[in-house]
Image 1 (cartoon, one colour):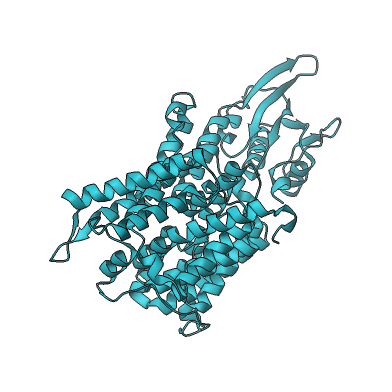
Image 2 (cartoon, one colour):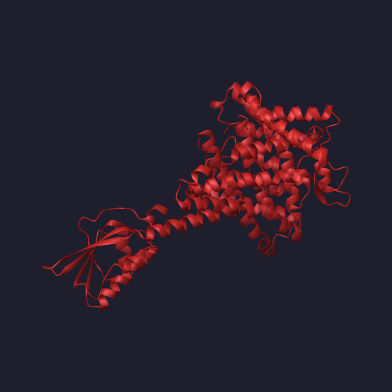
Length: 520
C-alpha cells in the first residue's frame, strides 16, 4: 500500500514538506468551494481532509491530491438550496457507491478513449478556470456590501507580493532544492506581512469573515462526527438525490481520472485507474456519514505537490493530516497567511498547467484536432470540466466516424465465362459507412451471381450486418444470388440467426475479431 520498498530518507523528507505546502493551499480552496455549494466552511474543510486522506492511502495514483472541488460544488448548490445540507450528505453517499461500482467493474480503462486533443483542451481550459478563480481575490466589499475591484495602494501591494511569491517559486530551485520553493514563498510572504504592518493585505481569516459576514468566523473546529444523513430513507428521497448523485459521481470520476493521466505524464509513471475510482468512492461515502461535502482529485493542488517534489503517498497523507491539525490546533497560523501568497502559488500553477506549445501546434495539427482543442477549452471555461470532456469525446468520435465513412470503396471484376461479378470491399463497414456501401452495387444491372469479398474490409457493428441483409434482400427481389466471402465467423452466425439468405464461402476465411468481441 505504502510502497515501502521505494521509500528513502530524502523522498520522505520531500513528501513531508510538499504535503505541508499543499495543506496551506487547500484551506482557502476548501472554504471557497464550501461557499459555492452553500454549506458551512467546516463542511468543505472536513471534505478536503477525508477525501485527501482516504485517496492518498488507498488510491491508485501516489502524489495526486484530492479534496473539495469547484466542479462538484456547482452541482451541489441547487440540491442544498432546495432540500438542505442533509440531502447533500445523502447524495454524496450514493455518489460514492456509484464510483465504487464503476471501479469494481473495471470501467476506469475507458479514460484511455479520451483523445489527446481533448486532453490539451482540458488542461488549457482548466488553467484558465484556475486563473479566473483567483481574480475574485482582487475584489473587496464596500460599505454597502457590494464587491468592488481593488485600486490604488492595496492593489499595488497585493500585486507586488504576488510577484515576489512567483519569483521565489521560480528561482529558488535554481539555488537549492532542500525545501520546496512554494513553502518557502508562503512562509516569506507571511512573515513580511506580519512584521511590516504597512503591508495591509487580506489574509485567509479576512477572506473567511468577508464571505460569512461574521467578524468572529474561524476555521477552528473539532473532529468530524459520524451521523447518518438526517433524511427519510424512502423512494421519494432516492428520486430527489439520484440525479445529483449520478452527476456528482460522473464529474468526480472524470476530473480524477484526467488528473491521474496528467500526473502520469508528468512523472513518467502509471497509476491504477480502477483502484483510484474505488478509493474516490469510498472517500465520498465516508464524507456522506461524517458531514463532508465530498470531492475528487484537485489538479491545481496536485500540480503544486508534483512541482514541489511530492511523488509518494506520504505527501497526500501529510497534507490531509496537517489540514486537520490546522482545524484542531493551529487555525491561527493558517488564518494569518496572506491571500497574495496563495494567489501567487496558483498563478505559478496556471503557468505550469497551460499547454503553451498548443499555440504552435494549432498550425501543424489537422484542423479537426485544432477545433476540438478550442472547443474543449471554451466549454471548460463556460460550463464545467466534465461536460467539456464529454463534448470533446463525442465530437472527436463523430469526426472520426465521418472521416472513415468515406473510406469504404470497392473494386469490381466480371467473369464472363461464369457470368458472375465480384466486388472487393476496401475499408471498414460500420454505421457511418453503410449508406456508401449500399451505393457501391448496381443490383439491376449485375449478373445472376454476385460475390462480395470482405478480405480487405472489417464488419464492425450491427448496422453493418443489417446493411448486408438489406443488400441480400435487394438481390433476391431481382431473382439473383448473393455470395459472401471472407466474412468473420461472428458475422456469419449473426446473419444465419437473422435468416439472411446469402451463401457463405467458408474457404480461406480469415479469423479476426470484431468490435463486439473486444468490448465483451
